[in-house]
Image (cartoon, rainbow, N blue to C red; front, side):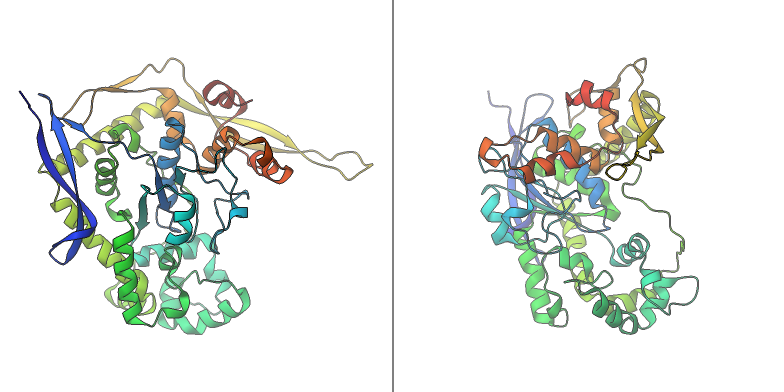
Length: 429
């Protein structure tokens, strides 16, 4: 007797029209008395890591998944998390692989589908992330120190001061910087491949939004991150354990001018200035909720369960790993001179061997699984740590082992991990 049942799961972008959104439907099959989901795990994916939109947190989730499944990453030749960015990437921008193929790209890269099709498999899943544009602008101002760069800002809220007359500050800044993009106007759209010279062409903006809708399989929304992750898990046929993350924000700098004066007039001014970002955000935020509406009735129950597991994992991990301080001695003297050594206190993490394990019982969405201190350590890792590990594990053909490539693999330094952990957990010496 066949006990299987079927559920139609819809994600944006192709054939069926539903409430003005275009959707592509994927059939998920369930069987057995516990209703286990039967589907194919997606292992080829590209993540458009949009700046200051929660991209680093998502990237660490993807890096851990790729490492656990022995996937091949497109890794940058430089020490940053940039593959060609802020320009379109070229072959010289990333480390070659053993057979010339790749499974995953998650570092900063300007999205260009034709270029990506040349290096990524045909069944690659494309994912992006967006954030409310005004929140993204505030984060950008803070991270890049734009309040110092834009001369003449007044008052306690530099963003509000800027948006009163953005052209006054923007034009001199762009003239000086000569960058192919601008931090303060449609920055998210630029990461998605929008040409800055067409910001004022509304028909092109609308075409671009539709193009993104066709090409990007799922856009995560930072304000609804947990809902986005559960949608991701279902679309990718991943386990709930795969989307766990460290709830402490990544790539965080303290705000000198923390303000909550996001008035309606401020949003209106920003919408007029950063028009493409708002149209993208509005469209994909609405699409996210349309996708959620198309899910099974248990979707919100799974989100709540995921949040409970996150909370339990966070509590357990505070005891399972411990932060320790180490003195790192560095220094390099000039030729023929005695080296002048410098010491720096660095904070690393080590495993608490007495912590035991946290058991997450079986539910309708997953089998029983365990959280151990080593998983806590992986959740704590920053993108720099993952980049270090992934580069050390990257396999090269002998003919690809040039000095430049080997230097790129050796150059990164971990941020959270010390040598003992690298050896015991990742077998890196």
